[in-house]
Length: 301
Image 1: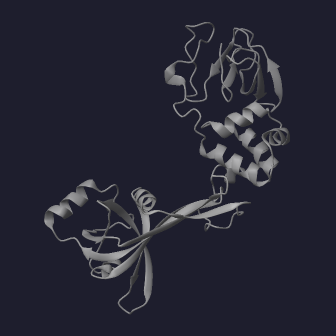
Image 2: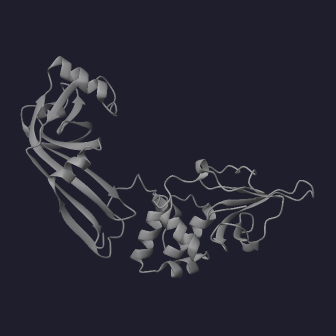
Image 3: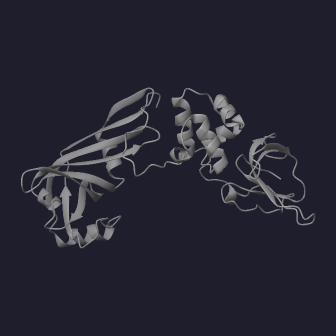
């Protein structure tokens, strides 16, 4: 039997008539993952040292499925059950680490506050883990935040209301990095002058084709007035919990794409349809003549 931190130990007791029991493995005593294990039981939230018997099996974190028992009682996890993202932290781990650093806490201090092993906290921060609700509750309490924040909740709230980084670094982005960030596609904002002369900023689904920004609209829309004018186009990404993000601003002339083959090619290769719905067959392109951007990160990154 071999396990990893975060795996689930399941005890089946059909012969004795006892109740099935399961818990999260929060501590290993051998580097090869063999027993015994420190297990936090789901029914009591208590951690005990467990030497699994013949009625036990492990559900591995990656797929939550029992591993074949061909090799020993449970066997070594096969390549299919190992996480391909090992060593690449997940969003929860990144947020836990960010909150911990913001408070100036070490892993040992945080683990003590959350009543978990230091090794398990390291695992959470360094791997794409999926901790139990009980674990998240303890971590949120230890870090003075909420489970929703650690999970990345609050999407309906306006960005920028979280804590600023202790040592933020604001740096300008070069043209190549700006192009790379723009090419992720998604939603951006186009700034145009409305027919009455007032400035308007409208979000649009956009694509990038050969360094040109393109979006779909209707001939009678505000965004259609961008054609044959110099406009500004902005795209950004904000991680509210980590208090960091980036923005890119493109400025250049806009025009309507009228060549039939170019229109067919854009429609064929579009990554998404306009979220606003309706018939939006008018393609507008913006060829940037000026490209700038900024990124906020911790000073040590």
